[in-house]
Length: 443
Image 1 (spheres, rainbow, N blue to C red):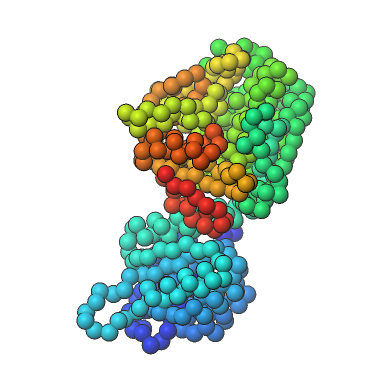
Image 2: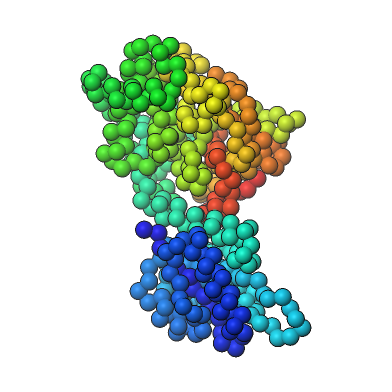
């Protein structure tokens, strides 16, 4: 259960009528974001009132609302009582009428922020009226970030096999990823799932094959044994995910599944994405985490791939991968088509271009040269383009200069795998970064 609490602070020497109206409007607006948010009946007009109100309260997000001016002791008391992310919100001062300052809430916000900074407590900040849609979008983004932060603490991320040589950027240490994100990293060898897949009967894999045929077109053109073995892998991964409560996974793919099993795992990962289990290939654990966060914020499966082409004239970057992408992202005119791998000539793999999406976010959770976590986010639009190369692709017209994005990505050593979220979730990502104490680079 996600728990939020509103902490409206102020002092009795300012206009209590205006303060009451402001609190009422803010509480009403917040209930549209979280109907179950805990709200007091009236302003908390003393430090002791804040302490009494929060006694025994547990929360995943606290909204400190400076309704009028209040000194830093009010915020310090709230921070002492609650160990959770904090949103500072300052409603606008009523229009000046050359009379008395009615609320002076903005000065209170500076006091609160200064106190939290001194306490080394991260916080997000929003200024503006609860009646302003842009303000409420920002408030909602912070709520979404706090919810994802909580979800990460119960996420089991599975790494299947090891990253190939030269792909160490995707390798995660269990202690590091838990420290930075709260995520539990589990590991299994690829051969364990391959061995399980080999042991299934035709009857056991029949439901999986039937499900795959509803999602993928053209399987009948692929070698029958490869299709059967793909269904075996699908069952092996699906059962392991369910039995171990896996929320995301990063799977080794080449060369093992081509050489040791004879059938790629690409289509399996694609279906898992649509089943709500973000799945990255090439055993990229941070790539899988990027996909998970992208999907959590957008409510849709994310594309995962390499930046392979820059078109400066169009201001576009093409993201591609050799055979995996969520089937639901395929263009309507083609559907999720089955094919064979561009290098190995073995199938089934996914072959399609992604459908258009007005707003997307390019996202990468990665690490710098010293192993510190960092996050990249860039906005754009997915264009209506067919498949660009063998495999799967999405063409993104970036909001900022595409050349700057590419040069910046290379010059600052970002990893060559990115998730593409099918929504503009940059504000949510920025809020999550603050909550986790991780720097966010926005292009």
